[in-house]
Image (cartoon, rainbow, N blue to C red; front, side, top):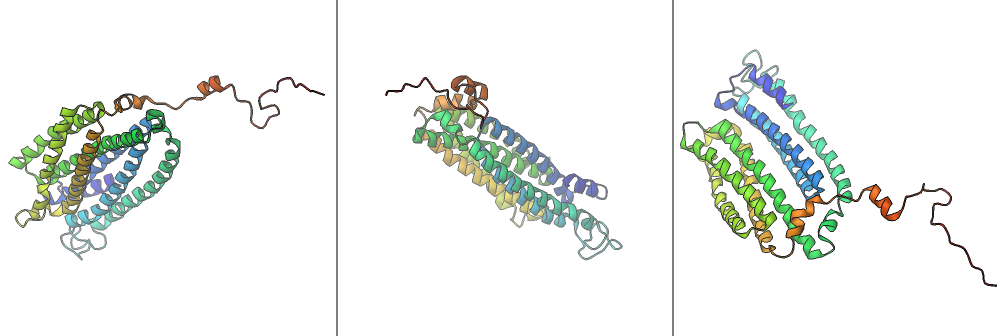
Length: 324
């Protein structure tokens, strides 16, 4: 649906104009989101990580909100002559037969499809919750304290992955829609990409291998990175608000979500740092290799299972001794 909207708009307008750049940005974000979601789903199923699957549900809900916001963003970009029909102004009008009316059904269908798929995902995640419920028990054992520490570790790794998408999403919108290539702000935004990637990867390695000095640096950089969200003020300043007009709602939503994710990562990171050197390192390094016991191994341990309901399915009785 997003690609159809992109194709219809690109046939009639110049997408290099700043007011129309929200359309290719919207397409790029959805492509990135779908690739990221497929990767996260595969990774969660491979690791039998129910926490990551729940996070994926929240991510899909955020994708639904973004798709709904895009209806407003596209209207702001395409409609400059409200009330005009196709005979007066086909491109800039919003009346019958205009470009806006031709793309509006596809913009509405996108959040509807995402919403329906979200309900389907809830059902399957609920079923997988019961299937994966024993995974942590097999990794850390029955110790409640170890189970809690391992769950915080899983949440930390999951948040780092979502931090990556949120940062790339905000940066992509700024680079495609707003910033000019010959400005210092463009260069600083590009330079921030490898720095943030190194930060996220370093934090993941540090929390898994319990490397205190790397974790300390990562936490300090996370706190410093919160200042990056000064851009939120620029979206509404009188001197720059026109620059962000067509993407203000989406950028604001993305920036707030990214801010909250990074702050949550910092808080959970402190909790994980406090759990270092408490006997969880082996579970972190080798817990991902857990696999449920297969049927051949069960059969070898407990004996071949006979057909249920058949006569003689129980254990054979030994000789009976009668005392009279």
